[in-house]
Amino acid sequence: MTRGIILHLEDSPSLVETFKNYFQECDLKDDFSYITCSTCAGFEQEYDANKGSLKCVIFDLLGNYTAMDDLEESDVKFLQFIESAIAKFNVPVFIYSGFLNQVEGKFDDYGTVYKIDKSDGIDVIFKKVKLFHDSGFLDLFCPGGFLDTQMHNEMHETFVSQFRHGEIENIINTVQQADANGCKERCTILFKRIAVQTLMSKLISPVIEEESAVNAAEHYYRRMNSIKFWTGDILEKNDKTEKVLILTPRCDCKKSTSHLICTVNNQFPKDLTKKGKEAILNALINNPQVTGYKLRPLPPCALFSGGSADISTYRLISITELEANYKVLISLSDGLTNEILAKFSAFFLRTGINTIDFKEEISYLEKLNEPK
Image 1: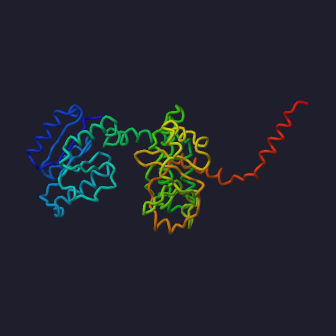
Image 2 (image 1 turned 90 degrees about the vertical axis):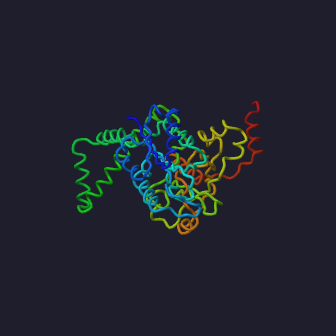
Image 3 (image 1 turned 180 degrees about the horizontal axis):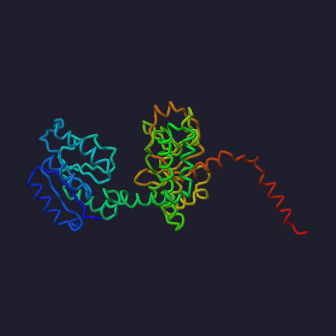
């Protein structure tokens, strides 16, 4: 990777000098160049010149504010630039200001935008940058990083390996015969899905082949599609009193007027938490033997607080009620979702038998063991 750029907007000359001195004394100076700007125009120019090597952005709001002042027009335009040009990419963006109230509610849905009060000091920012750098996060997601380069190459490699002579043309011809007018759009979606699916199979296969453990965070994601409710979604009631899991089969999610759900408890079963870390881990890995057939523990991580799905609480709920009273909190991976559905199927389809008289059965067994 090329030497990374940290780009910082600050209009106070004394603070700029302080920041530069701090940077020269920290562990990042060997791997990063630190560029400061005093105007929004200058910042945008440096961004255009260095965006291929950009690893981190720091900026202050430049207006003169009181607690009740509205943002000045120049800051409004600059924030729009940040959102459109930078925040949608995966480089950390630090809003370093003494007037964070001016950006309250802004960028809250961007996981790489951080709001740091100036009273906390610049070292808070550089410690985070070092954390992201040491973990490889910056090289993975930055412009020109792994996702932009190697991931593209790997997707191409896995995609072309899926087809043999004539197969691509046959797929296109099939689509074209079915709908000539919509062929281009349909083929674009179709081949995009094939490309992503084959790449995913490559990324996941080492976990299976080498039996490597996955991080709990890999079992959760935030859906980006337009479907309101999907199999494996965990929803939270607006008043925070309940969490539920969507169990509806995927093929019915778009056309159903109601969804099959079960309750998601906030914590692991109490008897497990009392037994310590080993019991909890065993429940996550070997859950049927540990928690029985009603609960599936959901591991806690940075994305989700965890808990357990109680499949015995299954019920139907209307889409209307879900839309009015619930919001999607997180979604489970396909693997974890499928495991819960399998567990639910076994629970739901159990037939059971009438209770056998214990004393009579013991009496018979004792008779069988009597010496002859």
